[in-house]
Length: 224
Image (cartoon, rainbow, N blue to C red; front, side):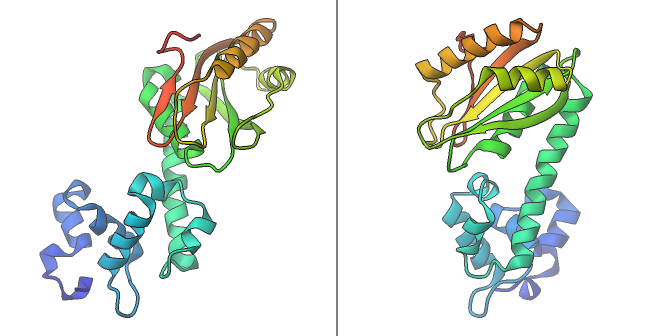
């Protein structure tokens, strides 16, 4: 059934406006964004197919433009709209972290990093540079590696910290395997960077490991 053939109060847009977005099922939310389907495949079926292909919204929001191209029915306009929604989510979380100390809302930091790093095909090492009040100044992807190893140069992290006049940093990297468990190598790297950054009076507050659907704090694990 197409959207126009539904009773008015059951159409996603009208339903959302009347009852709020939480009233919509996942397929209805995505159908509202996609608006149209394909010949022989209505927008609800297309939305259902997209969610199944990516394993739900989390996987969809980690999809690259090339990933989206695989789905018949997701033309340039639809791919652009999905990418725009993801970028708005990232920017909203980043804005919140610039206005208050990041650990006033640690889950927002994890959500932000999940949107930025989860699902990446190679390992990425990033640093959140914070001011003296622990508010976000910026995030930089410092190093990119293979699926199994990333070369991280402490000198480069120190240089960036000084350039941003950072008072503290949060380290982060993803595990492309999807498992967020910190390794012994992660612990060693954290200690190496802590020692290097202490020399310029910059604190390492945490090192977050991003997997698929999970972000693990090494500080919370007592590994700092």
